[in-house]
Image (cartoon, rainbow, N blue to C red; front, side, top):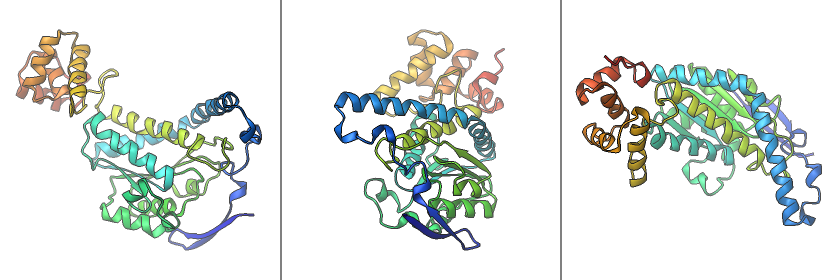
Length: 313
């Protein structure tokens, strides 16, 4: 038996976890002869296994919906979203946080990913970092975690000490806490106000949770960030109206979004885009209302940033 013992939480409660009992660590009978499969057999088997992930995520929708509502409510109060995790889980959190900036035009501090061992752990494993619950406390304190913030603890195993420590600290100071695990009855579920459990079963490659578990986590994180951004007005229809045009491709996309949102010509869209200071959302309101930048900006402010709520005279 492979066992891991560690202290978690302020109570210094000793918890013993039998890794062999976790479904993410057990052997997959369908791939017991993985090394003997043809490439075609391997691809077919792995694809078949991956198709089970979306079903597992679907079963967790109630908890995901509650989590989106929590994150959005905290955003509306000026709060931030922190993802915390180790290894693959931490990297996926950092990735999702980074993508919010160009996609939704957020301030880099609004959604942040913290990985055990710091940013160097994005490419090289930092020995022992995930086993230290106090390290997460230090990381969150360094970002001045507050009562309006939300912390999402991510761990495929559902028992990473770094994540447990971070969730406990967040709860202690009054921040909202959400856990995301790929096993049922996960340890981190008991340390969060909302627990998302997406059991994906044994991996194709035993214990390699960058596979199905990683896919499940990515799907859930996509929903958490995108869903919460929709709830605070950063989407109009299904258009990313707060996109930041930081390169030529995004400039072209921005003008196309204006055209699609207002059913206008490319010339009108380009003109509004320039006059708005390359602010897609503002340009859309300008076209819809026929107002200049200042008046359109006031209309948008009155509508709390939701284009759909702007009153068109």
